[in-house]
Image (cartoon, rainbow over all chains, first blue to last red; front, top):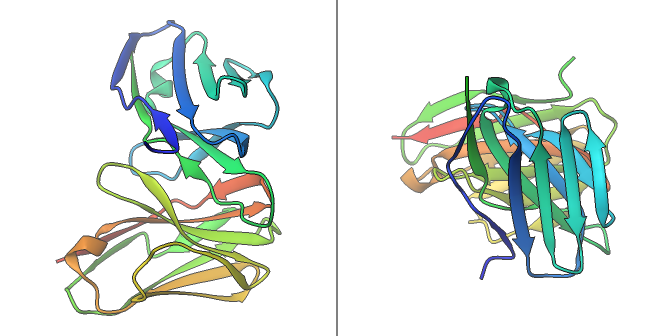
Length: 113
Length: 111
C-alpha cells in the first residue's frame, strides 16, 4: 500500500460546479499537508498549506484535514475552465531536517465551459 | 523575478552521454531538492540539500550526482544516460516545511 493514495480520475465537471478532491494516508507521522496545482508542461504551484486538523479557506479553495481519519480534501467552489489542471496532494512527516514531500498520484480535473 | 529557475528547459541527448541541469533560487531558502516526475506524472524525491549538506539521497543510481556550491544553487549531473532516465526533473526549495516552491522543470529525453 502506498503511503499516500489519491484517485487519479480523470474528473470532468461543468463550469460553476463544486469540486471535491481527496487523499488518504497511512502514516500518522505526516503532519504538514499541501495541495499543488500543475498545469500541463508546468511546475507544481502551491495552492494550500495546512498543518492542523480543520478547514483553511483561500478564495474559492478550501482545504480540509482530518488527522483522526488520515484524510485530506480540497474543495473548489464555482469552478472555472482555468481550474482545469492536475491537482496533487503532498505531505511531510514531522521530525528532523528531512522535509521531503510525499505526493499522491494527482487527479486530472477538467472544467467544461 | 523567477523564484526557482532551472536550465535547460528541454534536453534531448543520446544514450551514454553525460549532462547537467542547473537550478538557482532567490527566495533565501535553506533547503533545495531534486524531484523526478515520470511518464505517469508521479513526483518522487531524489535528493535534498540543506545549507549545502546532503540530507536526502533516495534510491537513485549513482550515475546521478547532485552538487550544491552554495545554498542558492543545486545542480544535477547525470552520467551515462539511459533511456529510462527520460522524465521531467524539477528543482524545488523550501524554508523547513514552508514555502515549498518548484521550478518549471527540465524535460529530459534520452534517445
